[in-house]
Length: 127
Image 1 (cartoon, rainbow, N blue to C red):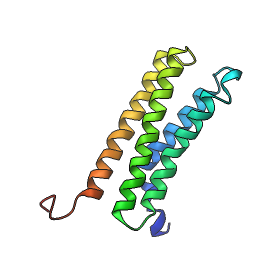
Image 2 (cartoon, one colour):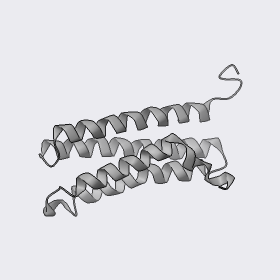
Image 3 (cartoon, rainbow, N blue to C red):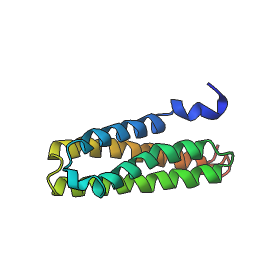
Image 4 (cartoon, rainbow, N blue to C red):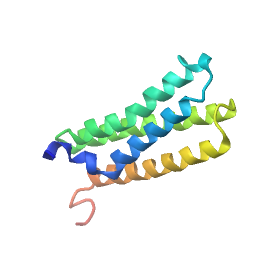
């Protein structure tokens, strides 16, 4: 694997892909009238997460990396909100929502840690 694609080994990336697969699995249960509304939004927001992680980690500067991680985090929060709406509409069960929220929480922690490491310099972090 090339140096530039090392991000594929990172848990922040693999967990983001796992989240996308979970969203797609849930979307199969949504009513047909949601295909171009909530389903489309959930699809786009969830796919944005690993896509922005990959794009950011493929960038040369740490500033750019942090920028794309922040975009991915915003998409993660979008997915969280949309899943809460889907649950309120009874498209997904409370158990399904809880499973997805666990994944979202894990991904949020991973992103926060990655962002902190990218912002951390030997001087500011006392290394």
